[in-house]
Length: 222
Image 1 (cartoon, rainbow, N blue to C red):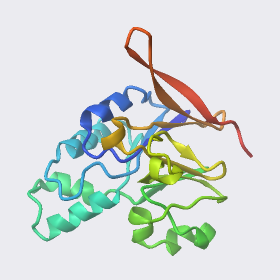
Image 2: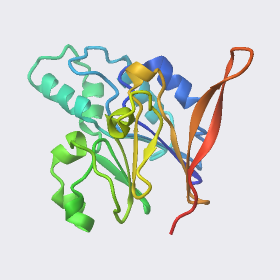
Image 3: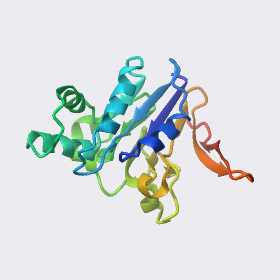
């Protein structure tokens, strides 16, 4: 893979998601990883789920990875308890098949987090709670980079106006931009050749129009 893109916490904002997708180059050498919470709690609107499912199915295997968040986990519980109006078997089967994490040589992509005390045994030491609902967030050094959503970057920074990707300057990248408030979905990009992370910022021009500008988050690290 040349570039890996990641997004999280769409929360049914389909138009914003489509706008963020315009920043993603999904040629056959690149990859998009979505790390959960595509819907809202108790939602009966499945349009965003159908859109993401089709996006995944129209690309090559492993080119679009869709990870379950706590909202998808709760939706499946509602479906199991007949509390949801969603009855489409193909959609339900797809939801049930969503993984809790995705691992590369350098990263762990997950909705909320992992049990980092388990170190290299995190796959077996982390309960489902950690993957989907871990709170609070964790910072510090880990042997792989961890890319997660779930906790908004405004909450992490304590800055109510901060909606960009947050990097703790060690091993953690948080990408929940509080979409419903910020009206934007942060896109994290990893260049596998340069070993470099970047993101995008929406800039208003003098004529009132907007353009997206890519900015570097990290340079190559050992």
